[in-house]
Image (cartoon, rainbow, N blue to C red; front, side, top):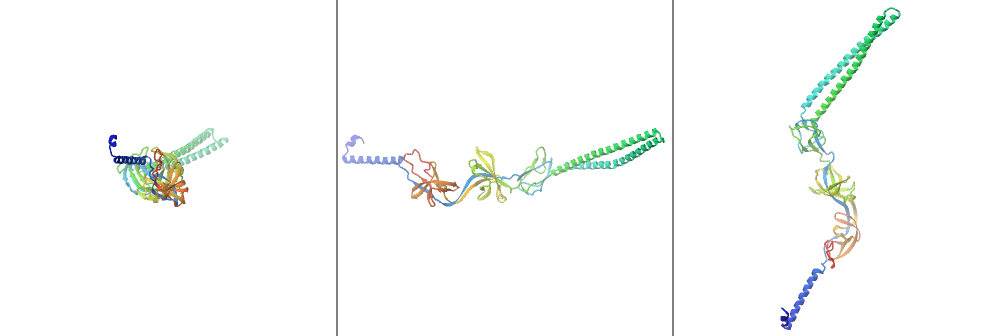
Length: 414
């Protein structure tokens, strides 16, 4: 419809058209206002109550079950030979001192037999020396004593000219010879005894060594536990070299501990002696408890995140349910308070550097509270000031956005 057609219309139709245009303009203006300027209505979706209760300050971390030091023993063979008997398999329970494997010992038995024969020979040689030399020495001593008496007598007779100088010289020569024989036999006796005894001790040492090697052919369990790995079977030959050949691994399933990976942002709150609660995925409804024993100073970096390792000993009663390398979900109790004023964590907001809450005063009516809070637990937060017992706080709320805001305020949907 153009201007000429409008002028040609009767007056009543002109008024109707003008009214319709005005209504259209008003409707468009209302829609524009709603779209760009109107504030959305405030809505309180969920609420919680300020009430007295208990709060535990906790650190939520991840851990892993490990065997304690000494609870896993790899048993090896220190001798070379064929495995004659493997008496265990994976999963078998063994006691400390129980025989678990036998290695062929025929070669060592042969060597032991040779050393025993050599030992008998050395003992006989020593006995022969101990028997013959003392007799020979007594005989030489008797000759020496007789020669000394003879030379003294000849010298005395020569003083009275009852003998000749040649007889004296002969007696002195016999005395010197007897003395030399006695000295030589005494020296030989000491030397032969030293050699025989040393030889006997050497053979005894070799025999003891072979007997020790003989013990290597019988392999016993050093601890009570369960066989977790068997790396050799009957009939296989093992060769002992610079490294001991591992045959069987035994672990004690009752001696477990937990390694807790504490995030570097939480390590300042963790300390030895703090209570620990944890669960594993296979028993999500069962809570295990303990205490932190140690916090290692050396950091552990995993996926570019710095952790500090804390350890906790697992009781034998709890170890019945747990196995090494299980992942654990850990709560470290850093602080605990009772009979204090608390509010749901979701009711405490952080706005413009302050902790605030929205008190519900009526249907979709609220009052903003400035809070001072204490410790924060898993579900509730300690209220030191700003709210009173019995106050109803909004835990999930839609707040209107200010008309001059360039973007929705943080926390518009809480």
